[in-house]
Image (tube, rainbow, N blue to C red; front, side):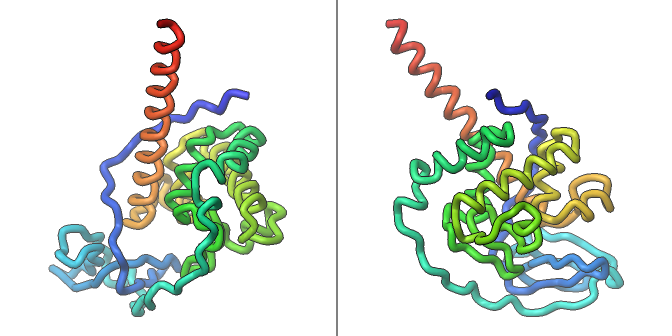
Length: 226
């Protein structure tokens, strides 16, 4: 089965940094930042210590700030579980079932969990594709830390989002990260640094993997013709 063709538009979005604060916005969305300050009557949420990157809000749009605790250590999976070869059968099966490019799923896994099936975020997302409990339940996942179930559920959810946003990969990824409600509210990628960085990171990795695959195929074809 040939994977669906996706319209990919890579925006110039910077990657995030380690967060020290969490801002709760008036709309209920939580956004991590390094620190914040009021500048010219606007609330700036800085994503880096050197203040080279930030996102601005009206003060009324930010409800509260809280310190972000140090990351909680999680048990490390066996080396074979984090290697691409160990995940490939799971990604290939899920990709085939939902007509998704295996390299896209691999890119999402890398961005979400780094290949750690026991990963858990501060918000409660779990496993390889960082499924929230409700999303997992909606897709028949009973154990998000079980790699096969997690990848199957994550692929099904990404498939739904791509269908919802008419194969627009950037919007589907934004919804995967921030939720469909945020994408619909802003009629596009929400103006959240974390979400914009996530979309750019996944698409950049997907493009890299696809180009790598194409180069390998060309080299193989050239060798066969010699």
